[in-house]
Amino acid sequence: MNLIINLEPLLKPLTGIGHYTRELTRELVRESEGDQIAGLLGPRILRLSSDHPLLGSPDVDDGAADETSLSAPEGRLSQWARRYLRNGATRYLYHKATGLRLHRHASRQANPKDALYWEPNYVRLPWPGRSVVTVHDLSHRRFPEYHPKDRIAFLERHLKASLAGATRINVVSRFTAQELTALFDIDPARIDIVSPGVAERFFNADAHQRERVRKRHDLPAHYCLSVGTLEPRKNLPRLLDAFLDQSLERQRNCPLLLAGQRGWGDQRLSQKALNAIEDGRVRQLGYIQDADLPALYANATLFAYISRYEGFGMPVIEAMAAGVPVVTADRSATQEVAADAALKVDPDDTGAIRQALERLQDDSALGQSLRDAGRLRAGHFTWQHSAANLRASFRHAMSH
Image 1 (tube, rainbow, N blue to C red):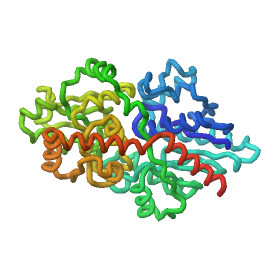
Image 2 (image 1 turned 90 degrees about the vertical axis):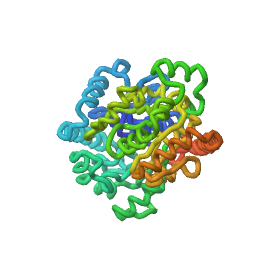
Image 3 (image 1 turned 180 degrees about the vertical axis):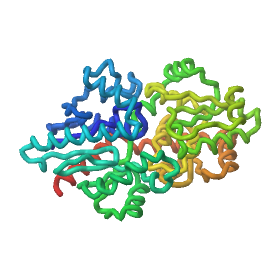
Image 4 (image 1 turned 45 degrees about the vertical axis):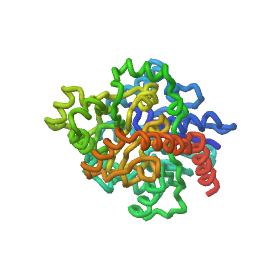
C-alpha cells in the first residue's frame, strides 16, 4: 500500500489528536511490511521511518517534535505552525499550501487510486483517490459555545464535504459513531471504530520514576489530579467548585492539581479559586512533558475528569493504566470508556462531584477495587490493537 498521512497534528504541542496521530503513525511505520508510508508536512512530503524526529519516543521528548532535531525547513515550519496555526487566517494559508502540495503529489502518481490518504484530523485535503478521515468528536455541533467562532466556521464550512468525499470514516468510540449518524446522516456501514490506545509506560511507572517526578514538580504526598487542555468543555469551574466545597482540612490534605496547557476561552477563576491557589490548595502545573505523565498519574490519590462532552477521553484510560481511582462524567464517551471501572457522576451536579471526591479519599476498599478494575479496563486499549483496526479500515477503503 502507498499511504500518505497528514502530519499537521504533530506540529503543535500535542493534545489528544496529536498523540493519537503520532502513536498510530509510529505503529504503522513499525509494521509497514513493505508498505510505502509518507507524511505530509505543509509543502513537504516526507518519507517516514521509525527514527524520524516527529515520531520520537515520548520517554525522552516533550510531546512534540524538537526543532533542533528536525531539518532546517522542517524546524522552521514547526516553529511557524506552533505560533500561527491557531489564527484563522494563517491556518487557512497553511491548509491551502498543504492542499496544493498534496494535489501535486497526486498528479505525479501513475494511478492515484493505488494510493491512500489518511486525514487524522477531521477535514481532508483535495485528493482524487481513496481516503480515510478520522473524526474525534462533534462537540462543535452539540456545544458550539465550547469552541472559538473561527473553529466552528472552519468545521461547518468543510466537514460535511470531507465526510462525503472520504472512502471510509474512522471514529474513536461508539458514541462518536452514533453522533455521526445522528448529526450527518452517515451510513453506519461507512464507519470504522479505531479507539486510542494507552502506552505501556503508563502501566509501568516505577518507584524511581515516581520519586523523580515528585521532586521535579514538588508534589504533595496526596493530591487529586485533573489532566487536560484548559478550555470550557473540560468543565474545570464545576470541578473547582466541588473541590472548594470540601472542608479546608480536606483541601489541604489532598490539594487539586491541574495539569494541561491553556486552551481557548475565558479561563478567569473565581476569587475563591484564586485564594485557594495562593494558599496552595489548588495548583496549576501547566503543560507536563510526556515522560513525566505516567508517574504524575501514579502518584495521585485520585483522578477527576468531569468533562461535559468527549469523543473518547484519553486521560481516563491513562489514569486507569497508572492505577489511580477515577471519577468521570456519566455522559458522552467517558461513560463508555470507563465502563464499570470508575465512579461516574452528573458533570453539572457540584454536590455529586464533591461526594465522589470524598468517597475516593475515605473508602480505601472502593479505591483499591477501582484501581484493579481500571488497570484491567485499560489493558483492553493498546496502540497495537488500534493500529490493527486502522489497517483493517485502510484495507476496506482500498477494496472499495
